[in-house]
Length: 135
Image (cartoon, rainbow, N blue to C red; front, side):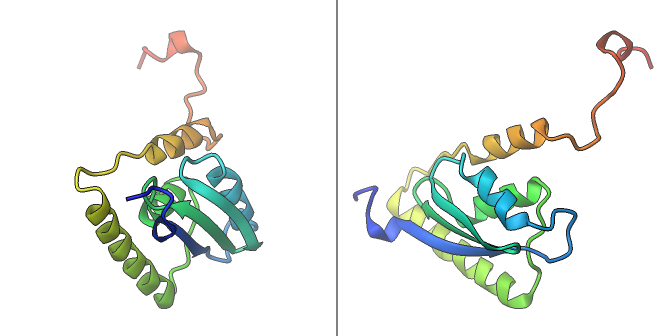
């Protein structure tokens, strides 16, 4: 099967909660996702609506959304969005399993972990290195 097959290119919407310390979560997420392998495009339609195009053979919607949640973004909890997510997760997992029986290895989680570690989130030990070993 050709990797560039139109069936493996997906376009999805991710909706964020309105009340969040970052009033423009969609644009912030688009900036982060532009560095992720497999994401072809990511753009903000509104402060809470993100549209993405990605290659399913490189990354799935579930991986993208889990990475965003791990990075501190808040996805919409409306029932319609939860149902849509569950349907996309199931169909994408099935399609990936049918295309690549050996499994797909992605570095998506690594990218989100590196981004989270680089962020100033106030959980770093402020003591000098030589003081940290004393309790």
